[in-house]
Length: 484
Image (cartoon, rainbow, N blue to C red; front, top):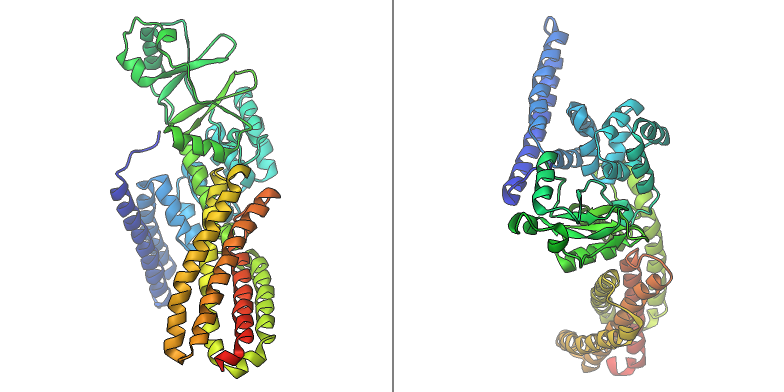
């Protein structure tokens, strides 16, 4: 069962533990280096004693730490130190720590473990936890694991592995308590006392019939406060938020937030109880989705270990950098087409980055709002036109206001009223372009089944840069005789 921590103290303790681990590692390296340089009898023995002393202290520190804190420490260490610390972790904790670390760090740890170690680590986990870990395990370990499980766990694991990653079935937990509707609350309480402990995040019991079909739920609060002689059928809640295993996990997460759920039943097409979805699984999913969106917006293909090799990082980052390079060449050619205009008024070269920069910022603001709305399911055909009109209106007002500001700024610097008008017009038009593209890019990507967050920031910046240069220099060319 998960430990309870005060959030503030847990955070301070985690940082303190990380600092202590790093200090012990540095002390170990320093003393080992000094001893190695000394010319003394039985130096190997002294080195061994020093090594054992520091690692024993580090081992004791790791044993006292929560698995999530050990995971944070592992993520914050360079590869060599990470593997040294990983070797000191008790074998029976390997599985739960592998679940806590990021995907990239988990990959680096699994590479150092043989099949027997991986199998032993997986066997300490519950079925749903094994399903979370399974995609990172070698196929031979998965096969050995399936053979080592009893029939019920094997069936549950195979069922969990059959669902797509972003579905409720992949997050489903099989550890739950069911009761019958025809018993009294007193009987139900005696049953719970015989169990000894309840599964984590248990706020309700699931009421089923003889065929396993869900009839309702019994909140623990009602079970404890109502008359013990009352029947479960008379006290249970029949209006229940339920999910199917094929439901989208993000939609389920939104439902958990909307209805303040702690747990909810997962049923099949015949209303039979399959498992439950818990808030901890939902929170983990939301965190992973948030991390994935942040990486995707920046054009990163996958989560990256901050201490990964140079080549691994290059492989992860090159694709959208290449696209960005192409768009930069396009922007440079736009500027090249107006070389004559810039030669006549050098001030244009100093001012045009302002237009492009503000346009990119405005476009990313619109983009972020649209991506979020798409993720929450707030955009549909009936309101899309109104949303588009609203963003155009916001861009027009911002363009006129801030265009006037930069126009006055340009006039004060260069004493040319026409230059101020060009700045205001270019600012307004580029913000309108940014608004159009900020809505269009993620909407079209979503319509064609692509993640609207992937690389959208790179694309919007490319459009507003090239478009901003073209609009500003084009207007300057039209009004050149007034500018000069």
